[in-house]
Length: 49
Image 1 (cartoon, rainbow, N blue to C red):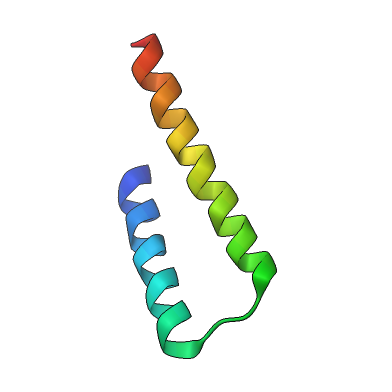
Image 2 (image 1 turned 90 degrees about the vertical axis):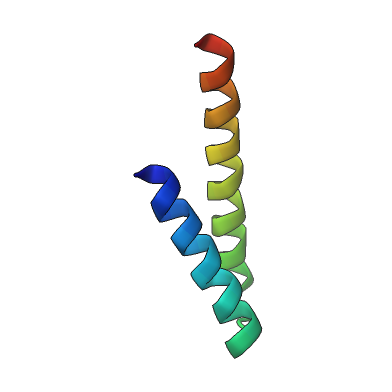
């Protein structure tokens, strides 16, 4: 479920960035931080399992 939401948001973000030339750098930093957190959670989950 979390992966589905993350993928959908990432696709919508990319489409919005290309289509509307979003320049709100803060939003992009938050999305980048969320993506990094998901990757770290995935890697830590793999290691402990």
